[in-house]
Image (cartoon, rainbow over all chains, first blue to last red):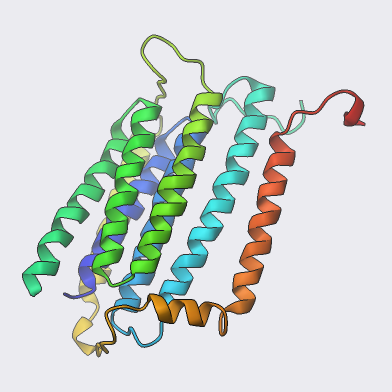
Amino acid sequence: MSSEYYFILAAALFCIGLAVIITKKNAVMVLMGVELVLNAANINFVAVNKNNLVSLDGQFFALFVIVMAAAEAAVGLAIILKLFKYYKTTELDKINQLKG
Amino acid sequence: MVVLIEIPFYIFSGLAILFAGVILFTKNLLYGAFSLVGTFLCVAAIYVLAQAEFVAVTQLMVYVGGIVVLLIFGVMLTNKITDKGIITSSYNRFLGAIIAISLFVVLFYGILKINFGAVKGQSADMNNVNQIGVELLTEYLLPFEIAAVVLLIALIGSSVISGYKTKETDE
């Protein structure tokens, strides 16, 4: 099975994630879009690695991307919780002050 | 043999795009979080079909077991629950649709232009979990340790950011 099907699937997931990031108002929903984009990138790494399984560089890249995604989700949610404590909302349009 | 890989691939990729579309079009945040679980499960199945078993198991443990639980905690802690559930709305719909569809068209065209016949496939053992374990502690030891430190610092930092501070310790 050729790699291009994997690439097309990854492109579709990337574009859906980008649309979620652009259109959603809630900050948690935007984080979900970021996770979709990271998954699309991982699919590309694994699909490229599928052609040459002697070295597993692509799979290691995917593993480290997953670790970074976990760190990113934890820090992002902490920031969102702090913003909610201060602004009492998570709508990104209403969070427009650096120092209140 | 070809059919054995292709039919599950089409099923799981279709389901992944379907769940991702639910995330895009739903108004309920919890429905979005749960369809994110569905997307991650289908992507893990895609990893198995691409002979990346260890990445698939890591995906299940980290994403489905960790990140989605964190996201659901975030949803529950930051929203006022009304009768209709946790509702969010969207904006910039037209702009988002234009950007996403045009980017997908460009990517699709580019992918079709790639000559995949020139890529020589090299087959190896079906089971490469052993090789991943050996290489992770020899060749990739430095990135592995750095990733561990980054994860530790990120978790300490997130608990410091979101932690509750009393007046006495706030100075």
